[in-house]
Amino acid sequence: MAGQAEFEADRKEARQEGGKAGRQEGTKGRTQGGSLPRGGDLGPAVSAAMAMIDVLVTCFVSCRRLGAAMLLAVAAMTPGQAQTVAAFVNGEPITALDVEQRAKLIELSTRQTPTRQKVLDELIDEKLKIREAKRWGLEIGEGDIDAAFANMGSRAPGHPNAEQFAQILKEKGVNVANFKSRIRADLVWPQLVRGRYQASLEIGEQDVLAAMLNKNTDADKTAGYEYTLRPILFIVAPGSPPSVVEDRKKEAEGLRGRFRGCDEGLPFARELREVNVRDQIVRSSADLPPEQRKILDSVPVGQLTPPDVTKLGIEMFAVCNKTEANPDNTPGRRQARETIFQQKFEQLSKRYLQELRRTALIEYR
Image 1 (cartoon, rainbow, N blue to C red):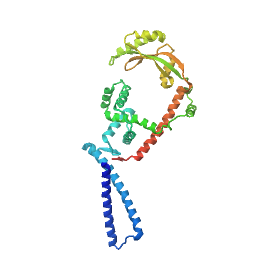
Image 2: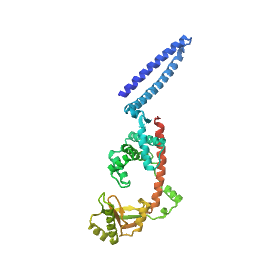
Image 3: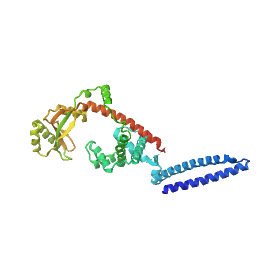
């Protein structure tokens, strides 16, 4: 209501200024010997003038509001920040510090120094994605962002936890808040694209067959399997010296040499010191990376996979069963389907961002 009242007050003020200017112009015309339209010609002339005033008033109010939004954004900054704004995106500032922090993050992840324009484009796209998500009521909780951040850390060398990963980033000159802003945009954007282009992202069987024929790789001819597995973990305390890890790995190799089938081998493994036999899992070869498929294919049913060092200890998998999967779920079909989906998603994502950029007010400084 307050915004509407402000708009009407601005409109009234502009009308008065317009009317005043019109009266001055009319007086000037009469002084110079001009004449006003007579009779029926007066109405159209006045209507046209008033319509023009309406257009100018709307433009005046909209531009003033947008300028006010930018002024408020600048006023909220410290003097140092206000002098280093790199761009505005719909009134939201991107500072030179944001650009510097994101450049370090990109360089850390790609091992390449990005151009300033590339960094700005990423930050602009990020703000547009988050703004669009808010427009549609899509919110990513802080817990989800923290979980994604911790998961990224667990995949880094040394498998650091969230706090350790944050410290590593700080030492590299990367701001954690800037990084989490990128995570937020990356999490919400696929939901927006899928929601808007759901029908266009559907993949038909003919598309899959055509992609497989064009590619014609060995993966297309590989039969798919479903593996019934039991994970076996030789626990190693975090921070243990390499000698302890090596000793536990030798113990795992010893079990692998004595393992004779899941029925007898699993109870025996449970009796070993600090060994955890986990619940049964079923994995399809179509869902596994090629190197993992190769390992599981080479292990006979009733045997163990080679020991693998993880952040929790030494892990192996008992292959308790292996059955041929549905022909529609082979690695080749799954790979073709994923490739087609990714191509469509990238095209539609690019189109969506272009539309958001066309309707946004982006001002570079």
